Image (tube, rainbow, N blue to C red; front, side, top):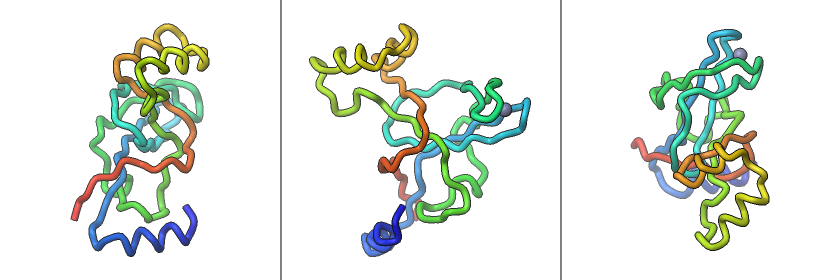
Length: 132
Ligand SMILES: [Zn+2]
């Protein structure tokens, strides 16, 4: 995030927001993967660890405070994001969108039922929750 953007956010209001985040822990290599939501939807209990590829287990959205600092704190930034490839796409067009993405049958069904996909963090705006 640029410093200009941060400055604008400070002026927006005095409210404090935290990003909608979850984390997954890998019991093999101990890596914690921090993930932000840019869309709402369902997510799996297990993902592939980004470091070693073994299974990493969900924190079930109960994060230690250090992993859910208010937006703008840079100590720990998510490396991944949950997104829906059909967010904002009309029902008529989304079949075409899904076909072009070459998803597996399982992934496609998951998305059609409101599931989210995982990708490396982009500059997409995260979902935020007001905490104060
Ligand atoms: Zn691992």
